[in-house]
Length: 110
Length: 111
Image (cartoon, rainbow over all chains, first blue to last red):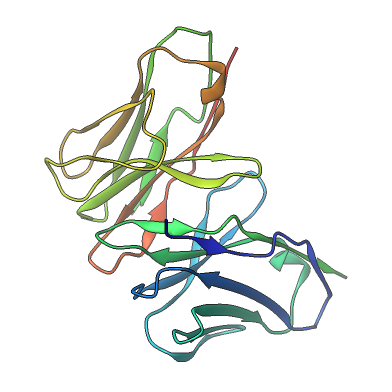
């Protein structure tokens, strides 16, 4: 069974710090990787996609992929209280479906 | 563009009642999905439709049926609601590169 693992947290960081969120996956054949942000009571929102090894930067967000280690991470620079949310890692598991991790709660304190 | 829309936003049912959750997308996506999200369980796929005219079971299909009415619309039906189906239901859609976009959700309570 394909699995995506995340630390449930909460991960607490002070405002202005770098938050590092990690995810491991079991299916070595996975090709597409996504990070979603979910505020309490809201729906998941896609914030990053990454398809090849290395880093991908978008504003304060950097996604990192290491297929050999089956590891994907999300770095949030200059963390803000508005970044406080649950972050979901998702992996393409064949056909058109995604397997989601259970998410890591991030708390950014002022 | 509205993206993915869902109706209703909230619903309370009694055990044994039936209802249909509606979902529509205006992004011309081929694939559509229904998930449920419960505390501690994460997002679980109920059913999906990879293209108009096809539907497939996901991880937790029991107690649900779906209809892909056309390319835009994908509905989820509970024939005889049970308290175990109390959850938040999300519809999503995706195009060719597997990025899924979610609707606002339906919060369902079954008493």
